[in-house]
Image 1 (cartoon, rainbow, N blue to C red):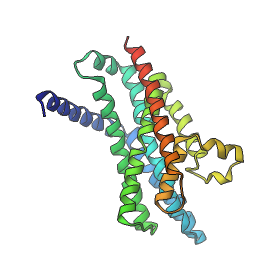
Image 2 (cartoon, helix red, strand yellow; image 1 turned 60 degrees about the vertical axis):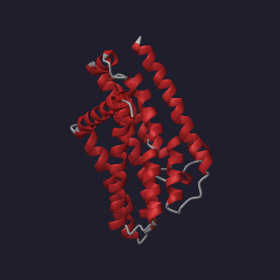
Image 3 (cartoon, rainbow, N blue to C red; image 1 turned 180 degrees about the vertical axis):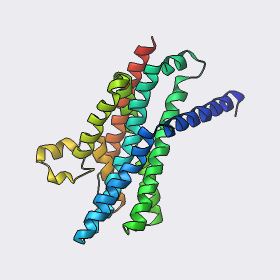
Length: 252
């Protein structure tokens, strides 16, 4: 490995560590990101079903709330964090510094994935210990990997939002995207409860396909895996191309 590559990796590690520390020091981000999915799962997946004798929600909501949980860090980490960096002048400073801007964006991606993995592991522990969810070791690993990597298209979506929206409106816009998309994608309720037109609309949402992949892994669905991967990959590429175009225009 060349000295230039070594220096770049060291710079990436420093920037990622700084990004993780910055996010961890923001309770408004870290606390809801880590605790809200666990609270929702405990209420809707454990407490309410126990009163009716129904154990199925513990498995179903592990998959769908897992998808819901990883989307949050991706959207808020980029959508809100990037807008705040832009408002405070940090992005302008980084643009004129010797550090490639890609290092900053990769650091944010890695930060989002670390938080995504952390909440998925916590959710899995709660499901296994309190919900009686039992999966083979390979399925647990596949679920964690799928959900964590599944956050990537939403990092690109957050990057686009953060590139377009000022800091004062970023939280509202992210919530307007995050919560309706989660509901319409069947992450809170099965889409079979919705009218047929809404069920068809869900097919174009990347969050729906991430949930379907997770449900397939826990044994409750038989997803069209090539279609799901194509939608997730295609939406991620689309959001990334649009976001980079906005960033290039701002850099001029």
